[in-house]
Length: 167
Image (spheres, one colour):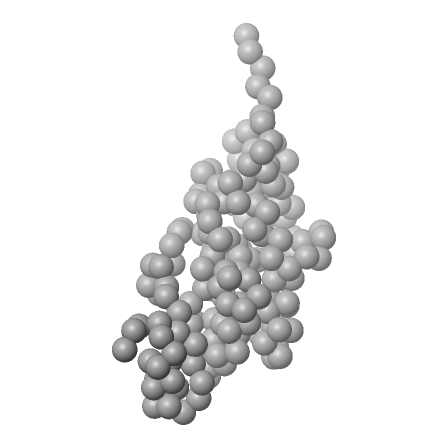
């Protein structure tokens, strides 16, 4: 049977006892970058679409942000940009920064309750259905430093050019 054909999905669903959706994961089930960032609004929207309350730990983020504009999946707009924590000018030597490298492709781990491991496949199905199987972003640390709860985060978008003085 073809790996992504309907016959295989029907057979797996019959054996599992519930309908399944076949999907191809690009990189397996492992994280693709050193830092995962997700907005609380994104998790709230996924919870609404999945019809259940979700603990943010399902998404295993390193950083959770509360947005000024309450727009789910706003993290996509950050691709190619730089997040600066606590300082607007990312040239400040003590401002930790993250280069936003890619959208966070989700796996079946988001289906598992972090306390009980009870599965809820409707969570990943919601992410696949409404946002191409992504939620949040991955990034690479470009400057280390201290993060704190309530700290302001600034975004320098990929399209912004930094002006630098010349001597």
